[in-house]
Structure formats: C-alpha cells, structure tokens
Length: 405
Image 1 (tube, one colour):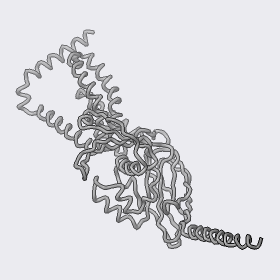
Image 2 (cartoon, one colour):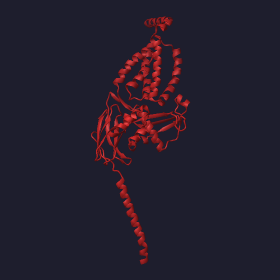
Image 3 (cartoon, rainbow, N blue to C red):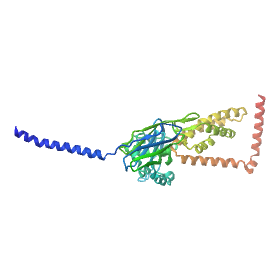
Image 4 (cartoon, helix red, strand yellow):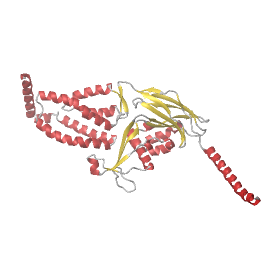
C-alpha cells in the first residue's frame, strides 16, 4: 500500500507543476494583451453631414485609429486591370467587380501623420492605397472592405473593346480578396482625402479626441465608428444616423445625395440649346455634370444622362415632325448603328477610369467644336450657298404646309 502511494506522488507533483506553468503562461499572455480602447461620441444624429466629436481612452503609448463606414448602404466598385505585370510583362485583362462596397469608408489617423498623407498626394493619380495604409500603420484598422464579395472575370483585348466582362473566374482566397479590395477602395473613392484623414489627438495618458467631419452629400442611414489600437484591440461600434430631406435625395447606385434644384436648372438650359442643335443635349450635359458634381461617378452620369435625353428628344421629334424636318429613312438607318453602339458603350464605360473618360470625351467635343467653327467660316459659307438656298426654301414650304393645316 505504501509503495503504491510513493508511486503516485511523482505523478501528482508533475501534474501540479504543469498546472502552475499553464496558469503562469496565461498570466503572461494576459499581461501582454492590449486592452480594447473605449469610445464615445457627442451626438447620434446628423442632418446631411456635420461634425462628430469622438473621445475615448486607450493604453498609454499606443497609436489610435478610427474606422468609419456606412452601415445601411453599399455601392458598386469596379476596376479593369489592363496594366502590364512587372514580372511577366503581360497584360492580365481581369475585371474586378463588387456590389458590397460601403457607400462611405474612411480611416482617421493621428494628426502627426498628416505629412505622410501630404507626401502621398504628390504622386497624383498614381498613389497606392495599400502603400499609404502601411505607411500610416493603419492596416490594423482596415477590416470592413476585406469582407466584401468580389467577382473577377478573365477578359481579352477584343472582349474589352466590345465591352464584354469575359469569363468569370473561381473565387479568390482571403489574402487575394483583401489585396483587391484595397484597389477597389481607390477605384471607387479616387481621392486620398475621401479615404484618409489626420484628425486624432492622443495624450500621454492614452486619452484621445477627434473631430470627425462627415461631409454633406453622403448616404443617409446608420454609420459606425470603431476605435482601433491593434488587430485584437478594438472598441465596440459607436453608431450615429445621417438624415437627409427633400429636395436632397439619395441616389443609391451613385452612393451620394444631391439637391435636385441645381441639376434641374442646369438641364433646362442645356435642353434648350441641345434641341436647338438637333440633339438631346446629352453631349453638353454629360461633361457639365462630371465637372460641376464631382461626387457623381462618371459611369452613373453617363448612364443617367442617356434616358433623360429621351424627354428632350421626344418633344424635339414631335415639333420637328410638325415642320417636316425629319427624314425617317436616314433616321432609321442611323438608328440601327446607334442601337449597336448603345449596347457596347455602357460596357466600355464600366471598364474605363474617370481620367480616360474625360480624355476621350474631351477630344470628341474638341473635334465637334472645330467642325462647327469651320462651318461658320466665309470660305465654307461661299461654297455652300446652294445648300443654304435649298434649306431656306424647304423651311419656307414646311411653314406654309403647317399653316395650311
């Protein structure tokens, strides 16, 4: 019996040592873990934007970041990768698309990091979201976009020309999704100031304050603010509501809110001159909207202007038909070509950047302006006196026919 007890004692001693070691390890681990920061906001409601005062407490000596995003509204983000691969020298022609990008997403950092943001701005349109995120140390706060679903399609040069997305590829892994989500954030929001801001003041004792500005014209609904110290130390979300009222309306596919009075007046003026020149005014309205309302994505402008032109075109067709200025045979033949172009155009618009859109549209307008100016020169008018006389006679007969009815 005594021998059995002596045999058990070593095992009991070993068990006690292991238990004490596990407890000590847990204590060390708990001591190294960073406590989650606290967060508080001074208001829970905004009216078409405003400033939220954020405050809280973090561990002393730790950097603090704020991740802010729209909870209720998602938007579409896309990117066509046609740049040469540095290793292979080949163009991938892969189209990335997501419909789950938050309508608003921004990471706020400490004020002393403003020079880093200013340095990145010097790169112009070639700035890198992933590089700036790393330079700011804000990659620990980047958590929402990596969770979105991203589809990608293998295209070809010819397919991209005719606007085809191509063949859908298998789903990406978590690491690749995070990488591509960063590219989509830049493609969607474009400007550094829309995705990064240096507004946080951190005191030696770990307390922090920040004035988070939510600009006007953003999506309505709930917004979340999370304070972040590292990957495992994050606060609970502080929630506020952004409200808008008529005449300001939210455009879901654009991800922005807009006062309808301004585009209404602009379109009225454009339609008058557009119909005067035998068009719906879309070629005038399109660049004006892109320039005067930069918050609107160029894809949304192009898509929205197209159906709205129907209103001016419809009334224009009615009035031009009354004075018999429409040649239906010519119109039908041209219409077939426009039908084909109307299929290809929207797909191409989806794949090009704003800079490419402005470049192409700018040259088209320059060529049209040059042609119209050339047609007002004395030499051109002298060569086309006969055509002018025929046009005047045709107009005279059309007016007489209208009066006769």
